[in-house]
Length: 512
Image 1 (spheres, rainbow, N blue to C red):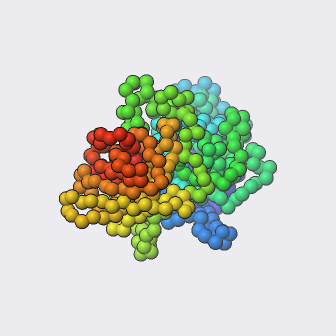
Image 2: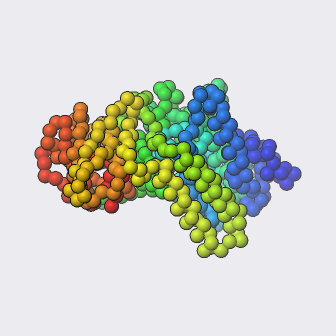
Image 3: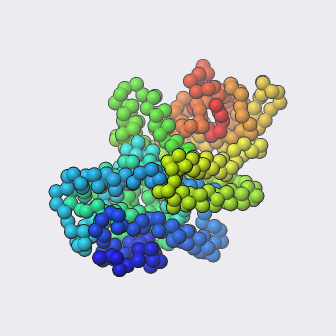
């Protein structure tokens, strides 16, 4: 039926991005006949990203994407597809398993009614996949990857999770009782492709289409960390599901993008996996099995005594003056990173093109090379190991205090830039002092710091809102209202005995 249409044509590729294919040209009898729409769309992804960059410069006078953030987003998309080298997609595999053994009726694959029913079924299934990914912490650990960028552009659409695909397939299984896998295989791709172009700030409003379809305006709200944006607008292609189930929000105040506690790194494996470690660390602070399990299966903001989803009023207040993480780095390094990234991207393409002819050992080796290279480029973009101290303020106009370190092991001293600010703890009701610390060399154990914290009001001991692979506990003892002394110990288990102590969230402070 669809044989007369060339799936790889430019027209088909462009229209597949906007869900403009007809049932007649996108209905197939078997799964093997279904085109790889997502793979065929790669040139159109690139073309639209270049177009957005050019239009953004002409319209705003500045690029809409930074090198560091853009490459990190594309790297996440590359990593998310690596499992396809070793297996068929979980969604299609699980669907075919249920269809082969348990389907009750077989709707005709070449019927327009079946095609449209599948469209509605996949989009409704995606709504619940997406909603559960925000409301169940262990699923959020995967989905937070997509929200980790503090920018909103077409590269953000490619910032996908490696692990989310291992859970999302469950939500589509009821359709396998009646709808043929070949029809499902078309729509699961088209639903994903549609969501690419809505990741842009250049398209402001689409008029009457806003009532029915998910648009850039609606999806910007979904990516915001403003209070009114949290857990809103889950729809894939249609926004009607959000209007029906009470999760819709209009775009009002300027949207500030990213996680409520920004991770501030371009290290791609950390971006993918840090939240799993955070959940594990959080669960260990509770004594009962119930609370430990609730850490993983209730909302990301949950804590004992709270409702299932926690209290969103405890998240940091957005001021509109937040500054996205974008450390400065030399032009020659930027050129090197871009060129090296293009080389590894070419390796990635060759790997997928020839995966059927390569041995498993070769595929594993090339996969390892890709992961190692992307991680190394992330280190460079983060400027890890640079000798100059850096300050990462959270908002425009925020000053940086300077902490002086006594080195009892090597003599001399050093400086580290500190950007202090108060945040509402995501887990607790009290405030947590959040500080970004960056040091210019590896620290010996138990090195003492004298930190000037002018103007800060320090609370009692609390948990850091985001504990990552590179983040340790720090305890501080109050010596003076404007200063404190902190000690960093391996594992963070040993605390100073003091009248008042707090825990600070840090980055790159304790390298062990």
